[in-house]
Image (cartoon, helix red, strand yellow):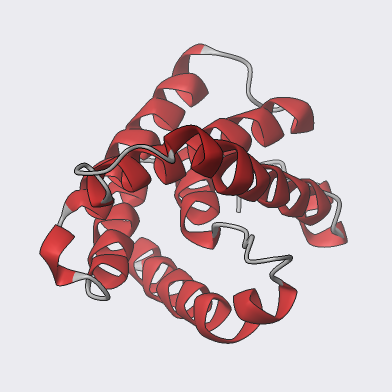
Length: 161
């Protein structure tokens, strides 16, 4: 029950972020990817498959904007969450630099694969898109993850959040 409340709360936070905050803090159209950052949060700090439930629901919410690609975002986010959960179980992930690298790579993979799926017919601008949007969005998300890690709320974690 507690996990479900946290997932619903994070869905509202992510929706609020995407609608109101993200357009304000966008730099030349580059926005941080709050959905992937929250999937990383659930995969790193929560037990079980909470990341899969959040990733599935957030993917459906994001896909409702373009229903022609319904389900792809959910699949990509669940696979990213599974990879992060694997990293959590098999490697030392407690370092902030490791977490920033995981978020950076996750956003980069999500943005790149999402671009490939949406523009499968014309991939002529793929490398331009990767450099212009995917890498920049991944850097922006990594910087926000780094800033969040140094908030006093997250500083002393003994048993998770």
